[in-house]
Every structure is written in C-alpha cells, then in structure tokens.
Image 1 (cartoon, rainbow, N blue to C red):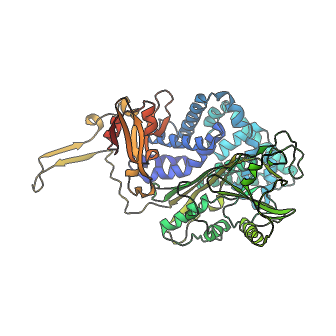
Image 2 (cartoon, rainbow, N blue to C red; image 1 turned 60 degrees about the horizontal axis):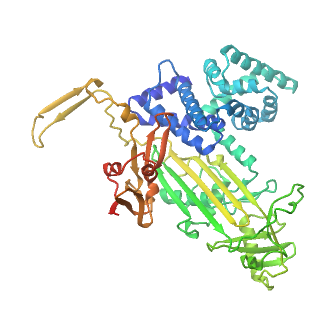
Image 3 (cartoon, rainbow, N blue to C red; image 1 turned 120 degrees about the vertical axis):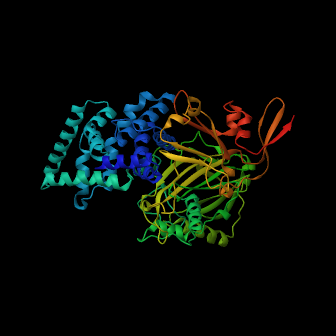
Length: 600
C-alpha cells in the first residue's frame, strides 16, 4: 500500500504535479537525513547531501523495477559514499554506521510505539537483542524496505536477512514472555505495525530525535529555548542563546500575529511568546536573518549570531597548575590572574559585587561587549539570575577595581550543542489557514579562554502549509501541447505546431549537465531580506582591471555546478569561483550581475 502510494505520487510528479513530489519530500526528508548522518557523522554535510539526493531524484527518472523508497536510499548511500571517498574515510563506514544501532533503537523506539503500558518493557527487551537482529528489524519493519533491498544495504544475502528478522522477532517474544507478558503474538503484531505506521505517517522525527540526542549527550549541554525557561534541577550545563527568539519573532511578523499559539498548550511556545529579546539588542554586524518561501509557500527562517571577542589584555594561562572543578577529580585548564601576573591585566576586570561565595565580575573586551561571571548556589532561570546580579551590583558599596592582591581563576570552556524542538513538530498554528511547524533546530558553539571568547549560533525554523492553495497554477508543458503565432489583431494565426514527442525538442547535452549556474539573491523578489551594507567591495582583479560590487553583497552572489568526477553539486560564491578559475567575468555579464569595472 505504501509502495503504491509512493509510485502514484511519483507518477503524478512526472505529469507536472509539483505538490506530489513535495509530499514525497516531506515523507522521506528526515528518514534520509538520519540514514546519511549515520554514515558521514556530520550534520551540516548530511543536510547538504540530502538536498543533493532530492535534486538528483528530481532530475533523474526512477529506474524500471525500482520502488521509490529503494531508489532514494540507493542514491543517498551513493552520495554519502562519494563524500566519504573524498574525505578518505571509506574504511570507517561499516564500523561507524552500524556500531551504535542498539543505542539508537533503544532511545527512539519510545517515540514510535503505541502501547503506553508496555513501553519500558519492550524497549528493554529490544535492547537485549544482538546488533545484527536490530539492524535487520529496523530496515525491514521500521524502514519498510524489502528483504532484497535490506540485504543490499547491509551487504548480506537475502536469506540471512530473513533469518535475522525471524530470529529477532522470536528472541524478542521469548524475552517478553520471561518478563510476564500475555498474548505475545498480538503484542508483537501491534508493536511492529505501530512502528511502521507511525514512521510513515509522521514524516519520521526519528532521525531528528536521534541526532539531537547524540549532539546533546556528547557535548554535555542542555539548550533552553528561552531566556526565561525554567532550568530543571535534573539537568546540568544549561545555556540559552537568542537566535531562536529572533526566528520566532520574525515568523510572528511574517504571519501578522503578536504571538504564535497552538490548539494545545506547549510550554516552549509560551516561553518564546513572552520573550523580550529582540534584534535591536544586537549590533547589526553580528547577526543575520534570512527568509525564504518554501514549496508550499511557508517560510524558512534562518537566524545566525556570531561574536569574536578579545580581552583588553591576555590573561595568564595556568597550564602548569592542577586545579579541579567542583567535586570532579580530573585536572581542569584555567586562566586568570595570580600574584605573579602583570598588573596591566587588572584593567580587564570590574567587580560588580563580592560576598565571599556569592560574587559577580565583568570582563571587558576590545569590542565593547561585556562578559559577566556570577558565582552562586541558587537554582533559578537566567532572567532571575540576571536580575539578582543587577540588584546586588546596585547595592554593593565596596571597591570595583581589581587590585594587586586580588586573584582570578576561570576555567576554559569549549562546547557544541544542537537541539531539535520536537515538541513543535507538526503542530498547526492557530488561525493560520493550515500553517504547520516543520523543522525547528538550534545549534551553538562557544569557547572561552585567556584571549577572549568565540560564539556562533544558528537557528532554522521551517513552516509548511498542509496543502497548496487551489489558486496555485502549474503551467508545465511536459507532454503534448500546441503552439500558435498570430498578429495582434488578426483573426487567424499564421503559424501552428503540435508537439507530440521529443523528436523536435532540444536534448540536454553533457555540457548542460555540468554547466555553471549563477544566482544573485539580492536581485530576487523580496530581496529586502538581504540587507547588504553600502560601500563598494572589490571581489576580483586581473592583469588590467579591478572589479567591484556597488555594495557589500559578495556572499549573496553564488554559483553552483556538478562536479564531473564525483557527481556532487558544488556551491560557492562567485568571488571564490573567479579566484579558483571556475568561472570568468563573462558569466556575471550573462546573468546581468551589476558590477563596476576599474582600469588599474
């Protein structure tokens, strides 16, 4: 049934129905993202590869005898392997891809089964299966692939796959029986059907959930969606950064609402609606907001924040000392000031308040940004913490200078975090005519050392409409059509042509396949979203001339082309393409890109 639906949608797409392929994209996007991520182990590259996969499938018809599902997995595997080959990491594939399947299945099966009363017992039972059984069960029973397709992907023969699935189900049944379950056949049947249906209908948040858990677990940081988010007593190393707040407020503006609400009460949405953080609190050069319309006329909003801060003076590096942190036993790297440090470092610091184990300081930077450190045992949200700092600082009557005998010790920090806000996935915004939340993702990288700190964060929020409006028109002349030509006021045309097949149509050549495409995003409709700074920018020069854009828009003029060796699609700025010799200045002329030519 699922296979027939895929083929029906794909055939509809071939007939020109754009919405049909959009449904296939929504259904398979996160599945393929999960599949590719577990091969290449790089989330951002996985996203790029997923786009290449769908572009390839759009341009290359399904081969005879292949199901759409099998075909797209094969393309994804090929693209991922090509990336690994380029990165000289092919030998890591089998180990990296399959080594942790047991953990992944255990962590996420909770989100897909429908038996509320037996969740924990079933998860524990599945976790007791050998890896080879779990892998086979996942692809056949959750991924919905055939035994043949699964065998090719796992590099096993078909009979082995059948044996793995059969034995895995039997072992699972025995484990559950030992746990005291009744009607095991019925339980397993409902369990497996529930997994398959949930995976197919939901567009599979499975991959997103696993990627989030991997990043958040590996980097030991909990990302809070809002400045006022309650910090749980059960979590450690909490952080907040305002990129998601910016995306949320931009979406409110785009859909004309003062707040974004859903039929059910969602805590994250409530916190973001109450957020007071705005782009006006940032320097224009440090953040960026890009907005695109999706295929269903929804919104893809990307917000980014980048800071590179340097202290007025570099602090001392205490690498020769074995300091620990809290109750930890391992030595931690620290920086700061001791009695042997140059006095010039003291100007980096302003004392906000000091009460032995409860104190706050401000670190000054060349860029003017302030880094505030607060030592406290209280458990509050970030808004409450900051209000405490302001109140205590206003009441403090001691000296604010860092003096000769004072000492400072700060641990190095290096963190990476990523989170998918699955609570928002698939939720329809009230009074929005069918606009739903699709992907809501946020990541952050932060480091603090004796020189200063680096911070980068990006949030991506994608909304889609449940259906494309009835007034949307798709004028695709992709089968039989008629051409007439006539004078403006004439009653009868002077030329007529009926096109029945492609004999008289211009065929795509190899040069077309590998031709370089250029896009100047600042010239597109709604280009006000690319607010480039004024002032000429020199992007290229040759022996005789220098070439300038009339403003600072170089990163918005991009080229893309298909690599002849790997078949991958390469993307870069036109500036990079000119410097690498991938294009000549004539390509900018061909596409009408505005530039200034100055003789040397």
